[in-house]
Amino acid sequence: MTICNNKDENSYMNYDGPLIIQIISTFARFLLKNTTDSEVVSKKLYRIFIELAQNVALYSMDRVTLTNNIIVGKGIVNIIENESEFKCITINKVLDEHVPILINYCTEINSTSIEALKAKKKDLYKLSSTQASGAHIGLIMIYMYSGNLLDFEIIDNGIKGKYFKLGVTINRK
Amino acid sequence: MENLFVNINPELIYYPIINFNYKTGLCEISGESYMEETYSFYEPVITWLQNYIAEKKSVVFNIKLTYFNTSSSRFILEILHLLKNYLLEGGNVELNWYFKNDDPDMLTEINDFMEEANVKINILPFDE
Image 1 (spheres, rainbow over the protein chains, first blue to last red):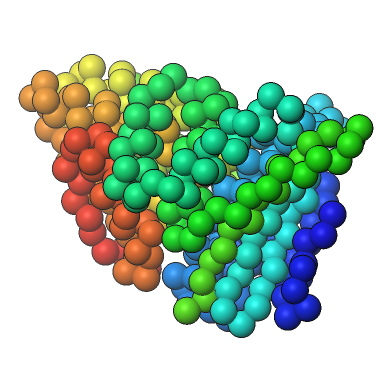
Image 2 (cartoon, rainbow over the protein chains, first blue to last red):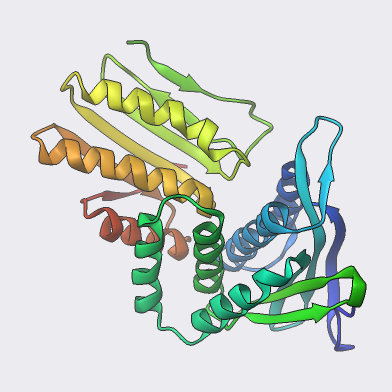
């Protein structure tokens, strides 16, 4: 699967494996401490990275059982940087029946005002805690942190299944 | 009732520090919150608060979180609802959220929480 399409883009960080919390935390701290951008940008990158990585950990259909019997999702997390922006990309396997749900969530978020999304979030919190509402709120939060449209795609990998690719842009200026 | 102090491991920064004092009513939650098992972490915290409030004591609740994930935000909202309801019942509650000036996203989150929980939160500068 292609992640960097543009020769001007640099892969700042790339990981393919189980998204255990210790890995997420270590990578996130690295991003926070090692980008030379403002605190505002570094924190956005930090928060978006954690939220995206934890989505993969929770919802990826590729599951890994660790030695302590914890089961966690695996997938790809990639950070691309260029002069004007960072892009956080995740790719993880999804069930066929989740594809239209994810497309619907992302399309709706991209076409909804911030105020309407805040109201939507409020309604979602009132629902009993379910994976669906959690994933939905997570995508809304990612969008609100980013301030840019979600860049999403379903990749049909034949017999290996379908993969959800989500790209989130963080402006550096 | 005993105090509630939870500091899982300073190296595991995704667990916040919980410091609830039964005698003074000063309750603080600080650090970051993005652990995997949010329910099992927050359930005893909320239970402690429910038991404390049942004794009709004053609460000064300070939130000093610098990051929390979506899963944690659900429990933070539950805590705010709990305190708001206690306030409406005549309880003495002061809610403070400390934040850093270079963190506009956190300010947005705090304002969203105020709106979602319909409760007043004093927004105060973070002591470094």
